[in-house]
Length: 213
Ligand SMILES: O=c1nc[nH]c2c1ncn2[C@H]1C[C@H](O)[C@@H](COP(=O)(O)OP(=O)(O)OP(=O)(O)O)O1
Ligand SMILES: [Mg+2]
Picture (tube, rainbow, N blue to C red):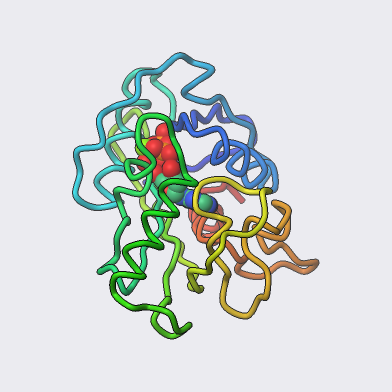
């Protein structure tokens, strides 16, 4: 028997990133769930020692489930640039340094692309990846992965999102995630579909698999 979530199940979100938490709240509300965050519960941030998104998501979710005795959901995500062999990838948060300077992290990505001579669009393909881990106090873990492909644009555009959003233009769109409001970034349309952002796509899979009824 696998565990199922209902609107009444308290769910802990094991993240300390406010931009991410805001999106996760909206995504969970869309599916009728409300949450407590690791920041509100004063949970410690485990060191992300894994070498994959899955391993780091599991480490964060299991730590929060064990600390609270409640089911916990973690999101490990990143910006992967094909021309940089998938960097910054699982190191996306770390490239911004202790001050979380994403303007600097984006410049760093651009400088590395310039060194490679990647000036044409087809040399600037990239994706956002999000892996969710839902960990239950009984030890059960479930994983869901969402991805969205796009182009790394320069200069960055827009100030609506967080992290690398201003330099990410999703395939089929002419504006960046930084220029989209969160509803556009989620990609919710009347009637519903698979969503747009990596995170909204992962949450759709999570909701289909883990919600009661
Ligand atoms: O939609 C996104 N739009 C822009 N940038 C994004 C996005 N999604 C992930 N990213 C980048 C920035 C973030 O800092 C890093 C994830 O690193 P990651 O370790 O999963 O999260 P984090 O350390 O910021 O917070 P926490 O681990 O407490 O959830 O990738
Ligand atoms: Mg982190």
